Image (cartoon, rainbow, N blue to C red; front, side, top):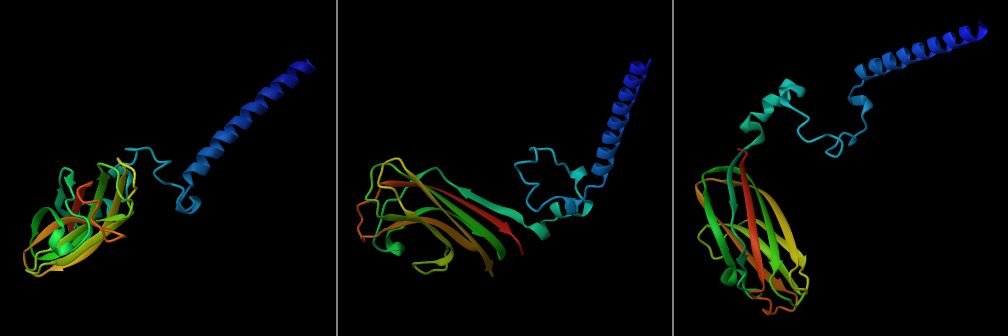
Length: 208
């Protein structure tokens, strides 16, 4: 009889403990706030893709997502197939490679440019590649709306490099925007001309 009672007490104790744990966990979960989450802890590594929907967001945040006057609206996404950079070294104004152009009306814009470069053959290892975004203002050089350079490109064939530029500009009238590529060698030489191709990506968002 004592053994049976002991078993009953043990089972009852486990049941009560389980209820307390489950109840305690539910209560704790219902009380978790932003103050309980360390800064940076809830990042893309711990949040499953597609698990956060509009219904999970504060209505004020959802409203901002649909207001282009607040976050800006995309007006241009410029890219091309890989193009050969014909000239390395010398004068940028005279020898740059034109990759294409587009027009922007008057307004304020956030321009982001990315240049992805690839070597077709072995190089000098002394060249720094350039992506340039220029406003056509009638001058030879043009208005600088974004310029970026890579570090020294690898001397080995079939290697890659990239650079990024971000700039905010204000236009008072419609202007043609040119996308160009070039490169400078540390020895001021032109031996790497024609050895690189570039894929440009330019994104323009209207912010004012």
